[in-house]
Every structure is written in C-alpha cells, then in structure tokens.
Image (cartoon, rainbow, N blue to C red; front, side, top):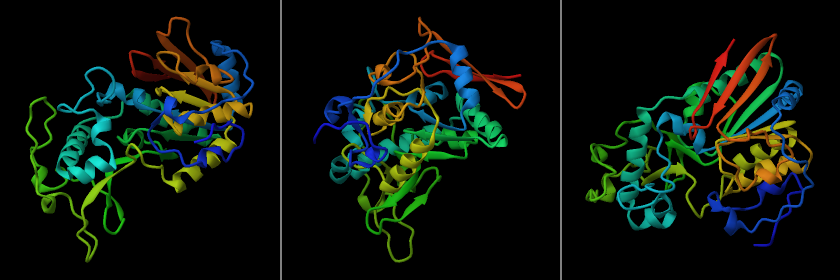
Length: 324
C-alpha cells in the first residue's frame, strides 16, 4: 500500500482494515503543527467556542469499568491472544472456540456498568445539545458502555458485542440473550488449561430470520477486515465538520482510527489528547493538552452559566466527573 498523506477529508474512506497497527499501515503524515500545549486555560477557551465536537475514545475509557482489553502482558484468554481468535480465519477453523471467547466477553459485559468517564461524556453531550452545540462520540470499543451511559450521537466503528451477523443471509441484529444459545451456557471460562467445549456447529448461535438458520458470527470488525463503509462515511462527515477533537483513552495505533485525529489536526482544528502517556500521534496533533507528570487531566467545561467539570484521571483509564 502506498504511503498516505493526511490532506483530503475523504482520506479515511480508504480501504484500511479495521485492526491494523501503525507500523504495518506505513502512513506518512505531513501537517505543519504548533507545539503541544498543557495550558488548561487555552483549552477552556477553545472548548467554549466549539460548536461541533468529536470525541474519539478507545479501550482506556472502559478500563475503569473492569473491561478486559486482552492487550499487553497477561492479555490472554486461555492461551490465546485476541488477535489469534478475532479473525475470519480463526472463525472458519474453529467457530466453537471463537464463540466461547465472545460468549465470555458478552457475559462479562452483562455485569459491567458505565464508569463516571462514560457518564461525563454523555452529560457533556446532553448539556451542549441544549445550547445548540453538537457532540459526537466515535469509539473503537465494542462494549456498548457509551450507549448504556446515555450517549446519543454514537458511532461504534468496530461494531458491538451485542450484535450478530448471519454468515448466510448477512442479516445484522441486536442480541442481548444470556447465554446467546443454550449450548454456550456455562462455557467460555478464560483460565489457562480450560478445555475447549467443541460445540457442534449446528448448536452454535443460528440466524432467526425466516427460512435461514445460518451460522451467526459476532458483528465486530476482526483483524484483516475492513470497517463498514457506511460507518466510515458518517465518521468522515463528522470529522469534516468538527471544530474541536478530543482523543480520550486510545493509543492511536490501530488504523484507520489512528488517522482520524491527525486528519482533523492537519486542517488546523485543535486536538486535545487525554491519555496517561504520550502516544505515536501526540506530536502530530496541533494541540495536545497534558500534565507534565501525566498523573491527571482536568478540564473545566463552562456549560449554560454553570461549571461542568470533566476530570480525566489517568490511573490507567480511570475517568470521572464532578458537576457544580
């Protein structure tokens, strides 16, 4: 794939696979940037003027809710990493094992609630909406915690744990059943050494569309797959209109999502990054508000004559807010 310059607003519609590392994408970035700033007063001024805010979120937002990321040291389900299971090839080879993995993740999420970071973002959207300002959340997460928190303008670019797609007819449907099928009841334990259930394919989740009965798969973007073009069109439109971009809890290394904020920054729009550490994209942003010791973030959002304070606290991924 040829190197890509982040210049055109149409860039993100290029056919990058949904889960590709920064190194493998070979992206070439050429915007002219101002030096990053950690001045909260500057941020408050920019925020107060913004009419259309795009918030990009990743796994760090959900970490405080106890959602496993399957990344880094110890990021295994049984003896496999997520990238060993979240592929079309793995599903074709062993759909029972892959469904056990996703059943485990679905069951965990049934017991998880949005943390104060999700709630802060949802409240920010609601309050600014009353002022005629728009907030849209573009998330890489598949846990639906933003939706559960009350976020309305939400684009889930990697899909959802609670949607299925039929491998035969292609139908996509919401599915919150627990368990998703009887054969998976009590299955999916993550401990090393757990034996695979080896569920017959005919007993795995099946399509309920009339006359179909095809094998269902999770409606999520797997490694090696492209993102939904319709979703990318919506993202493209939002990023072209936004006048402020917030990057919260994402490492900015998975493409094409890693291109979103640099693309916005390249057209002169401020980007505020809220992360525990600098990321590969930090130096490409026009603005990157961060504390010197990376121990906490504090942004005071003045809303409708009061002060809505969003505290983004980096005990990895811990975010909460206080309204006054």
